[in-house]
Image 1 (cartoon, rainbow, N blue to C red):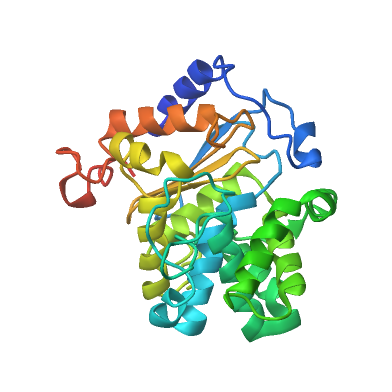
Image 2 (cartoon, rainbow, N blue to C red):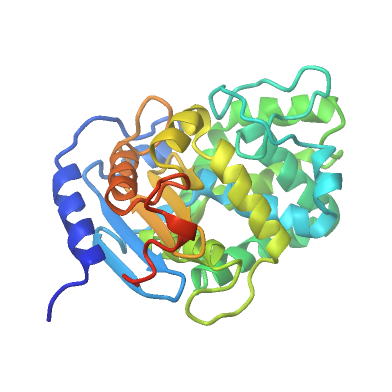
Length: 320
């Protein structure tokens, strides 16, 4: 049986970029330093549920910062965009993801994709849901992935023991009244959400859920409402790739989010969810192989939002 064109392409990219050896595995979280630097997987799920995958797509890794748009979406649903905007902005910061820096004048975090903003968002959820907060986060991410997800307890403990910089950020936020008095409890939820365990196939399915207007691509079950889905895609487009976000928008041109465990999630609106896993990170904390794979996919298929080939976001329609 003849292979689908997308399958042929991702196998070609896997072979080509599997030879790329630039970048280093994250070490500032001790447990992440144990990752095999040669792991590399690519997965794609269409908005109608078709799956294409190659390489280490079923190898589990922790979600890390890729959890941030999902908790932001939950906060939008819980409080509304106007209330959330009182606590966290939506502007790119130009700083590293773990910078201890707030907006001048407002003292808000720049956006929910940097650590200070993500901690603020999780604290907002904790203020509303208390002890149930993490279960709500885990349940919703599991629904987006289409299967029950769990926490990597070893990574959670490693982050909890060594996350002093994030604690400093949390206490700065507490000083400005951006998190409530139970900051430590909220912070524990943040560590747990970053340690949710998934695969590249799970991540591509979650991306496809966002591409499918918040509905799971296989079951059609609603996972996120339209307002929160739009907010997640917008903030991923402008701020999702740390201080590489501008160049990503220029080179790839689709909403995306990366994590320091090596995951990259990209969304082609109403068409496709893309995920890569490779723990070799560049100097900005993004997966080196993941970046190059997505750049090439965007180039080959005209995925960029402003590409002349992407007519009305329908370029892939005849292919899927």
